[in-house]
Each structure stands twice: as C-alpha cells, then as structure tokens.
Image (tube, rainbow, N blue to C red; front, side, top):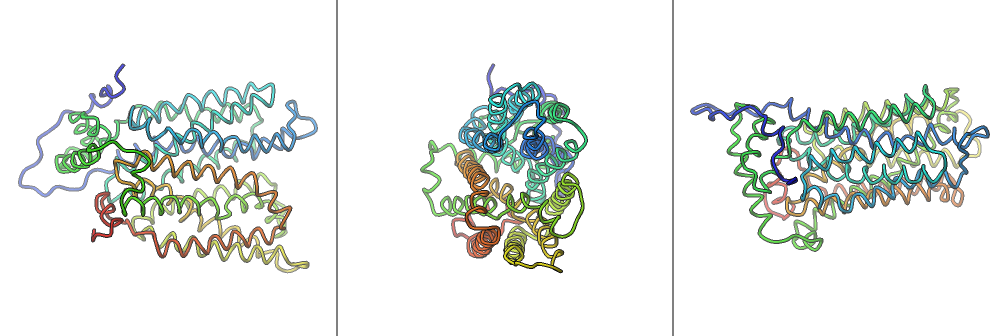
Length: 473
C-alpha cells in the first residue's frame, strides 16, 4: 500500500465549491481545527498517563505485601526508562512523519501504547515492566515530535498559539486522569482504564484528514485542497493558502536536507538556539523537583491531606492554568508569558530554598505552600506549554522534521538526567541548595527570553522565518 496515497477520509470530504466572487473572504471556521488538534493531542494525553503512572503505582509495588516486589533501584529504572524510550523514539520521528505522513504516524503510536499497557496489566516480572516502559517511551517520543507539527500545520495564524498549547494541556489532563483513577482503582484496573486513551486516539484521529502542508509536499494537490476546505470551511479562499503552501514546498524541495541545515543560515541557527533553549530551560526549571516535593510541602504547611488528594490538587492546578495559557497566548503574546513564567518561578524557588535552609520555620508553614502553588501556576502559563508550541512555529518547513526531533530528543534526555540525578543532588547538597540552583537557572531563562526569543504572535510561519533571519516581518 502506498503510504502517500490519499486516505478514504480525505476523499470523503464534501465536494469543492466555487470561491465566492466579489465578496470579502472571512476567516476559516475554527471548530474543525480545534477538533483535529484535540484528537491529535489525545496522544499527548496518553503521554501524560504513562508519565504519571509511577506516582500511584510504585508505592504499591514497593510495599511489603506487593505481589510483584520492586526494589528502590528497580523503581528508579521503571521511572527513567520512559525517558530513554522517548529519546530513541524522537530521533526517527521527523523522518517518519515526512515519509509516511503526520496522520499515519500519530495513529500508529496507539499500538506501542496499547502493547505497553497489556504488558503492565499482565506483568509477572520487573523485566516485563521495563519493556512496557520502553515501548511507551518510544510512542511518547514520536508523539512529542509529530503532534505539535500536525497541529501547527492545520491551524490558522489567529488560533495557532491556542492550538499549539493543547499539547501541554492534554498532557496535564492525562496526568490528572491517572491521579484520579489511581486514587480509586487498583493496579490492574488503572492499566486497563489507561489503555482506553490510545484507543480513543485511534478511533477519533483516524477520521481526521492529513496535514495540508504534507499533502502539498508529496504532490497530492487535490487532497490538500479538500483538507484545507475541511479545516477552513466552504466560504474560505483556500487557493490563497494553497499557493503559500506550494511556495513553501518548492523552497523546501530545492535541495536535500540534513542535520547540517539546522545551522546553515543565521535564521536557522537562531531558531535552533531558541527552540533548544526553551526545551532546556523547561526541564531545568525545577518542575519535577517541585512536584516531587509537593507532598512534603503540603505537610510542611500543616496540611493533613492524603498524598493522593494532594497530587490531584496539583494536577487540577496544572490543567486549569495550562488551559488558561491556551486562552491567553494569542492575546498576551509568547514573550510576556515566558518572561513572567521564568521570573516568578525563580522567585518561588529562591523562597523555597530559603525555607528549607531554616532551622526553625515555625510560623512560615504557609510560605512553601504559596510558593509551590504559584510556581505550578506560572509554569503552566508559560514554560509548560509554550516550548512545545513554539517548536512548531520556529523551524522552517524544510528542516522542521529534523529540528523537532533534535529538540524533543534534548527535552527527554534532560527529563532522564533530572529524574535520575535529583535525589543525588538533594542527598549531596541539601534541599535548599538544590532549589537555589534551579532558581538561578530560571533567572538565566528570564534573560534568555528577554534577549533571544522573538514575539511570534499574529505572524505567519513565513513572517517568523524572516524575523529570525533579521528581516522586518
């Protein structure tokens, strides 16, 4: 079967109608764009479920009465192997998306997710859990590269920011989903219920058309026009956008691309620096440290909440504020949200470090609770969703696949390193110094955004490339 052949779904769209003449052309309808983005980012929700799975499950597996005993060292590997698989999955993801199409590749990730959950439910040894986590990681790496690209390619400029943040929104929904189900279901049922997410991904996203940009790139012009008509509506002037996509495809096809092209021009180099920098600062911001210590911080504030309830509260805050970012990003802009996020995170972490270095913190129990809540709010408004969204905006079409793979590989490499080394940092340097290190990194992130990150709000992808190259957009 030809992987580039138009799907039955694309062929099934309503027949083309003549463009209205002598009338102003309105913007395209938004509902189908939102639906496509939501269905594509069900893959991100699946990522959230596998990320959060260890939180309710590892304490159960490491309990004295566990039917599948797991040591602390084995538990560390169960948590970390997801990132190892994601690194491996992200590397070929850009090539696969260009070769077979965004839609096919995203749908195909449902298979390793489902196999992973089947291994988890039927696990009789720790080795089976290792394999399950690696498989889930492979799918995670692919989804992390391809879903943001697909979303950016189906979105109009006016909603590209909002749709781009859905990757992080749906990831936090997946995390919250696992926290809630994990609080009421046992090990087996948590795995079974979690497996419904990749099933939903396959059933819904398979009905969506392929990215119009990819269809143009592979010469399927009729299918591209039908896909654009589906996403924009019958009153939209698709020929104008189709011409822009053809121009971008011609420019991208003039020469073979390689990793060297990521640094071949000033604009490409700046895009790579900004894209990688945002990914680096996202993972070195201390988000995992704060979430890891959230239960201790609730206890320090005098809370008697059950740890599972505390985790659900953290999850709710992340979902609500990530959604708020999707509503604000096309109004406030990218830079201001990133600047507020980084600077306030630096302040919160500095205060957390101050709290943990006190020998007598009587009367200050409220301080860490306020700090962790505010930290999660501003992370979810800025450095949580925006690096994923801007990754799809910054890179030129001809290098987007390779660049996205490099950026996502960098992100998951740092997830692995931070997850694996955080406990050693705390043991060797203490909580207060560890939080101060993260505070200094967030301060550096503020300067980085101020000096290097361009404002892309309201700009077309072509205008962004000219801006990165030093031209006036």
